Figure 1 (cartoon, rainbow, N blue to C red):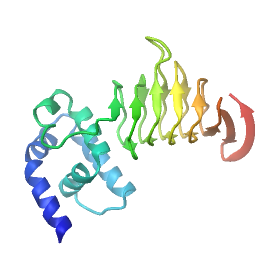
Figure 2 (cartoon, rainbow, N blue to C red):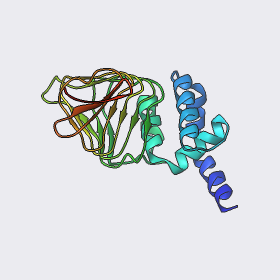
Figure 3 (cartoon, rainbow, N blue to C red):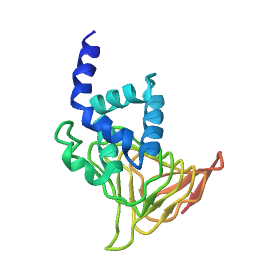
Figure 4 (cartoon, rainbow, N blue to C red):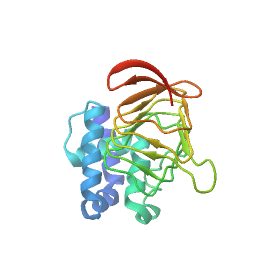
Length: 194
């Protein structure tokens, strides 16, 4: 009962957000992300009810929503503040990004592919003024990992917790360690340097 009251009150403050969602040029991408997030947090709600739920309980989703709506956010983000320790500074992010526990996370890549998963205390960033990573589709970057410089993280790859990646990662690999090395390629256990 309390949760329903909280969501009702939150829904009132989110009316401007709902209007922007329904009319924004990125509406399809945002709705796809709402569906994906609801699936990953195991909550069954419709798109608009799910949007209210996510905006109320997941500040990481707020940051992603404000990223998707661009300049419009300046008029409404005071109603539902974003997470101030999650920084998204990437010009091209594919649909379906999921940020789990976005505390102390920096996403500053050249691009991030579709359906990626980024955990807390991750740094994705530049090694100088121009060299930033390209993250492929379906990539998971686990807690505390660092992905730095002009490298490519291949599709369907996983960067393990606390790994430091400064070299390209091929498709379908799992990398761990400092410096990172491959422990799984195409589902088969290996031990290969990058």
